[in-house]
Length: 67
Image (cartoon, rainbow, N blue to C red; front, side):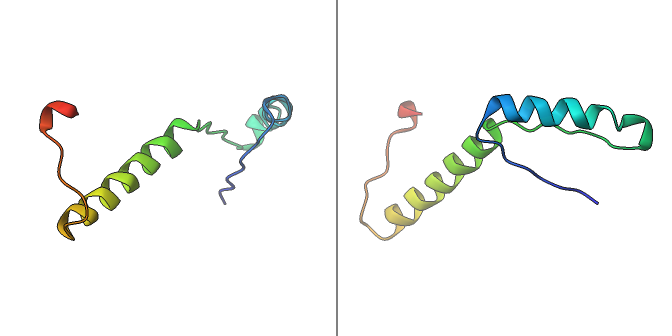
């Protein structure tokens, strides 16, 4: 079973991670994901939205040098 948890407070996240570390011998694996994954996904979605607007003629494409 996998559980994903999003903490808004870094202090609470550290406390929960500390607790989970004590279960490693019982087979618990802690995988830490940071918010950069969310940022990448959001940037990708924004790019797809931009492409859609360009195809609809509602937005002009940008030169490759802008990237």
